[in-house]
Image 1 (tube, rainbow, N blue to C red):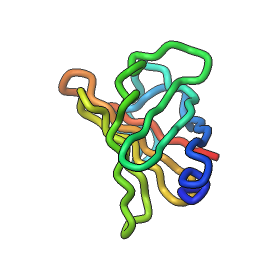
Image 2 (cartoon, rainbow, N blue to C red):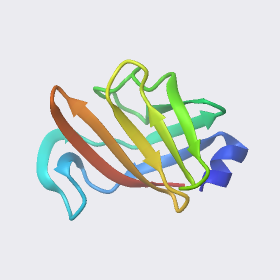
Image 3 (cartoon, one colour):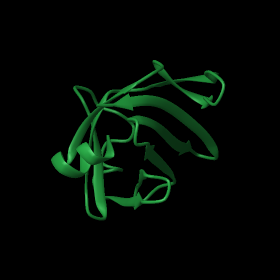
Image 4 (spheres, rainbow, N blue to C red):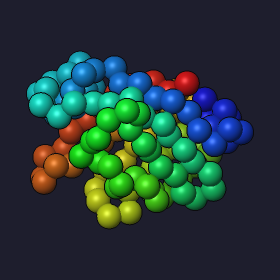
Length: 114
């Protein structure tokens, strides 16, 4: 998946759960009322973005100019928004973890990019 992203600059991503969760390491623990969303992930060089597909989200604009870090050892991509806490980590197999903080509370989403 990372090689496709490096080649095309864009992948489509779909969440596994309909809402963000307090923790998703062993299923959706502490489901929130914040809906997850499909998105386009773009990355090239040291910048990237995510854009929700067909809907407005609380994160609109936050990831427009995100810092992209290509981790060669772990073979992953990490996007971090410039003006907020959180990250999106894309693994080589296409799975992602999206972690964000609403106030002091962290919420998570898992999904897959193709």
